[in-house]
Amino acid sequence: MSFANFSSFEQIIPFLQQHRSYAYSILFLGSFFETVIPFSLIVFGEFFFLAGAILAGMEVLELWIVMTVLYTGGILGDNLSYWMGRRYGIGLFDRLQHWPMIGRLIHRENYEKGVVFFEKRGAFAVFIARLSGPLSWVTPAMAGVFKLNYGVFLRFNTPAVIIGISEFIILGYFFGNYIHMIIDWLHRYGLVIGLIFMCVVGAFLVIRRYFDWRGQVQRTEAEIIEFIGRHFGVAVLIIAGFILGILYLIYAVR
Image (tube, rainbow, N blue to C red; front, side):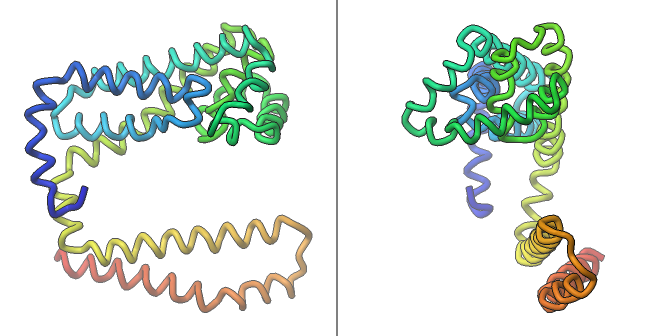
């Protein structure tokens, strides 16, 4: 959806308001299957979390119902994955390796990484994984495979589901609540905002590259200075672009 045709999106809002039950059902199913193995490997729950929250922020949907269906779907999906893992054990992952597309994501190497993570963290892995992206796809099922006590699983998993989904609800609701102002800002200052965003991403990549490089082996002071020198020009451009972008926005909105 481009900013230019945002008005065409507004035209379907009355339709969504008249068919809210379908919207809530879709949000529930998206949240549910996002955590049910093997669907969790191909269904991206973030899309449903953000979409529901944005519509709530625009007052198309009721926020408390959106939160209820998303939380319920996520908790039930994780619980189903847990019981599938407990029922079928390691055989569940062996079977999924032969599924088209899904087999590429559930291969032995990824599974073994999950095993190491789970064995190292124990029950707390259930909580951590739900907040750490890809590991959340398989951790509930692995908790079942390892026969983690179900009560312990609930205590660690349920709050993690609520916290993990709430992050997207807060972001999406804020965006939906101020969507017209945000769209107006993007119309006016889109290029500058894009520059600032690229500078932030560039800074993140340079910093991550530095810590990855330094973490490989013990580095001497001379090697660190040499690394900084090689990336000095890029760093200056990133900082300058960021500062100029911020200054332009400050001057433009005054």
